[in-house]
Length: 169
Image (tube, rainbow, N blue to C red; front, side, top):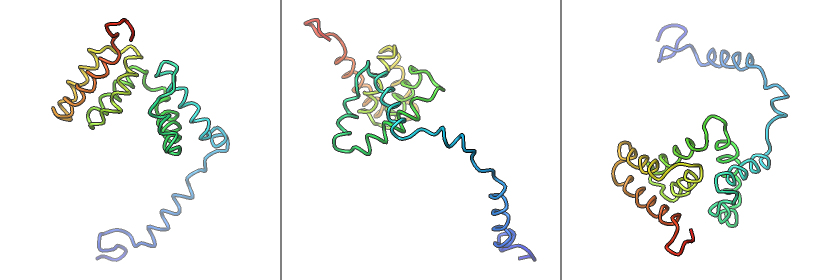
């Protein structure tokens, strides 16, 4: 150890602490207008509810509503953060966002969520063939077992959404 450094060759702890404190003091505080424009949880949840209805043909999401009954905090957090903050961001259009969600959920093996988002993707104009291509892509990063599970789930969804022989969807 040389003079003025520790065994790792760094300045002494006291000096590092003083430098860190000086850097923190130099960081400007967040201006008041930015704080005033922050959304409340209720506003974020409202925005999340609007996202769900836009994805689900004007209807609430049944899984979220069931969760709201037994796990209200989790439902509120999902609605406010996942939907109100993330899903409502302007960076992607609805089709792209849903294709990304389908791919991600398929890749991690969450076929229940994948099915929900595949339904939203179909509502947004994504074709069955495009969703099948997503499943084919999943074989590369996630493997055949996850892709096969996703394919089964999509087949169920497609069958549920096709008109039955009696003429009703």
